[in-house]
Image (cartoon, rainbow, N blue to C red):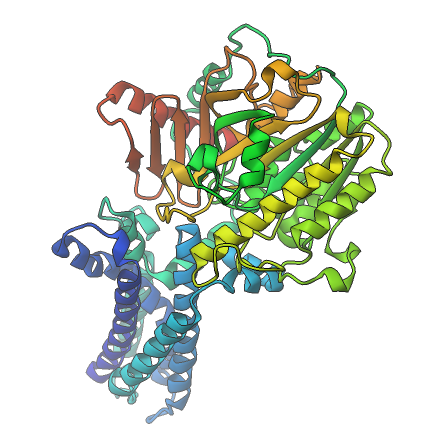
Length: 620
C-alpha cells in the first residue's frame, strides 16, 4: 500500500510544481501591476495551493481509476507508458492554455473562461484576429519554458512504478475507499459547507495577486460548468423587494421634461457604434492631440455628453447596451440565449413600429457573438455584413475596413425611404490594429497601432459626414456617435475595475440639432443604455419598454451609471465611483472613501442593480 501511496504523492507533486511555475510566470508578466510587498506577493503560492490541489485531483482521477482496476485484478506489474503520454498531453494543453490566459488577462482583466472558449469555437477567425496583436516572441518563450520545464518535471517526478499490493480483500477495499474519498474531498475542497470556488484563493487587495492565486485550469473548468447553470441568481445580495425598491428609487420620476434639442420629432436616425473608441482617444475628453481630429471637430457642432460610461467591456454588451438599453450582466453573456435575446426591447423595433425603415451595417461576420440573432429578431429590415462585400474588400482580418462599410451605408441610404433608422458598427480599431494605408503613429507597439487605427476610423467618419452632407436626406438626419466600450489603450489603463476603462464618448450631431444647442456639453453622469430613452423622448415616443434607460436631456434625471465586467460591478455618480469584486467581496476602487455615506449608497445601488438586472434576465 505504501508504494501506491508514494505513486500518488509523486503524481500530485508533479502537477503542483507545474502550477507553481505557471503562477510565477503570470506574476512575472504582470509584475508592473503589483505594488504589494514581497511577502504579500510570495503569499500567492500558499493561497493558490487549495485550487492547485483540486486541479491536481481532477487530473488524478484517470490514474486513480486505473489503479482501482489493477488493485482488484491479477495484474502485478502494470504498464504505465500510457501515464507518461497522459501527463505529456495535458502538459502541452495546459501550457497553451497558460499562454492564452496571459493574453486574455491583458485585454479582459479576467482569466481564461467559458466565454473565451465560446469565442474560439463559434468564431475562430475572429478569435485569431483578436490574438494577432499579442507579443509573439514572448508568447513563444513562455510556451517553451512551460513545456521544457514540464517535461523535465515529468522525467524527474512522474511516477513510473505502481505495484499491485498483496493484501487482503478488506484491506484493499479500505485503502481504495480511503484513496478515492480523499481524492474527491480534495476536489471539493474539504468538509465545509462551501465547496471550492475562486474566492478561496483571494487574499489581497491587489486584484492581480488574487487572480494569480486562482488556478488557471481550475478556473476554466469552473467557468465551463457554471456557464450551463442559469437557473439561480448569483447576485442575491438583498431580498427581492429591497433590491427592487432600490431600483425604483433610482428611476423614480423627478418631474421636469426633456430639453427639446431637435427641430423635428421625425428625423432620420443613424447610430454609429465605434469599436473601442474610448474617451481617452479624444482631445475633448482624453486630452489626446491629433488622434481624433474629425470627431473633435464634430463636437463643436453637436451635443456632447461628456460623462458617459459603457455598460461593459465587450462589444456584445455594448451593442445590447446601446440598441436595447440592456445592462451588462457581469459574467453572463445575454447573446448566448437567443430565446431571451429576442424578448429584449430595441430602438430598431420601436422605430419600425413608428414607420421607420431600418438597416444594420457591419463589415465583419454578423454571426459572431450572435449579433445576427439580435439584428434579425429586432425589426431590422436590411442586414449588410461581411457576406455582402466583394472579396477584394476583405483586406482586414475582421472583414471590410471602416471606409468601405461607411461608403456602402451611404449608398444604401440614398435608396431608402425616409424616415429611416440605420446602425453601423466599425471594426478597424480592433486587435490586431491594421489599417489599409500608412500607420499615422507608427506600428512598433500596440499603443502606436491602436492610435493609428483610431485615427483611420476617425478620418473615415470625417469623410463620411462630408459625403453625407451632400445627400438629400442629410438635413433631416440625427447622427449618434458612441463607442461600444472603452479600452486599456492608449493610456495603459490595465485595471479592469477602474471607471476610466468604461468612459466613452456620446455625441448627437446633425442639422436637426437646434442651433442654440450646437456645441453644448452636458456633464452629468450617464450610460450608453440611456441612449434609448434620451432619443425616444426627443421623438415623443413611449419609452416604457426600456426599463433601464433614462433621459439624459431631462435636467431632473438623477446622474449615474452602472457597469460590470466578468468578476465585478461598478456604480458612479457625479461625485464618486465605487467598484466591487463579486468573488472576493471587496471594494476595488473608491475615489472618495472619506464619504462613507455615499460609498455605502453607491455600493448598495450597484449590488441591487446587478441583482435586479439578472433577475430580469432569468425571467425572460
